[in-house]
Length: 165
Image 1 (cartoon, rainbow, N blue to C red):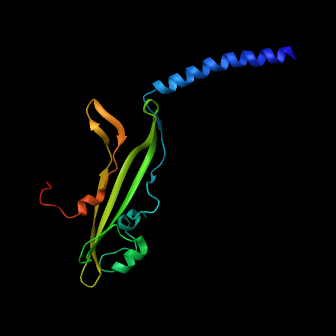
Image 2 (cartoon, rainbow, N blue to C red; image 1 turned 30 degrees about the vertical axis):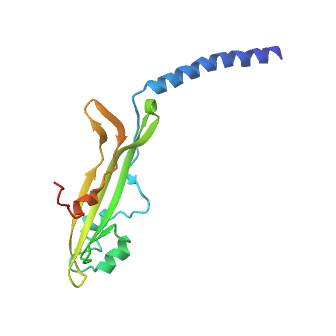
Image 3 (tube, rainbow, N blue to C red; image 1 turned 60 degrees about the horizontal axis):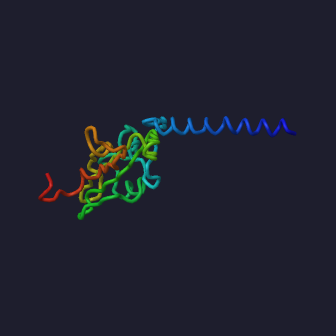
């Protein structure tokens, strides 16, 4: 009985310093990178890229109507006043970066994709235009934050204000 108590006490004496060393090393590491495949950042958005990048897509200029596009992709993010253009957005993330010293976990990459479908007066698809915006770390130079911004590719299709450049 005495031997069992001594072994537990000895194990505890060894476990406490090893735990402190492990926590100290974890906090001193700059970042920990975990590769994770690209996935949707917002599960309510539908990935439109297979429909516009494929040759055998159901979305074709001159053959697809506005109602068919909305039925296929859901409600658009933006729609112009005369209803001749609808814009869809799809945001993706990939990889995970853990910054122990900052107590921060975030994706390694963020991308935003947008597509603007243009229709004629009879609601037939005339064509589409795609935009892509990559996320980047906030700040610049030696004083940059490990916090990544959230890009928005739909900015390419929003009306420009007079003061915008």
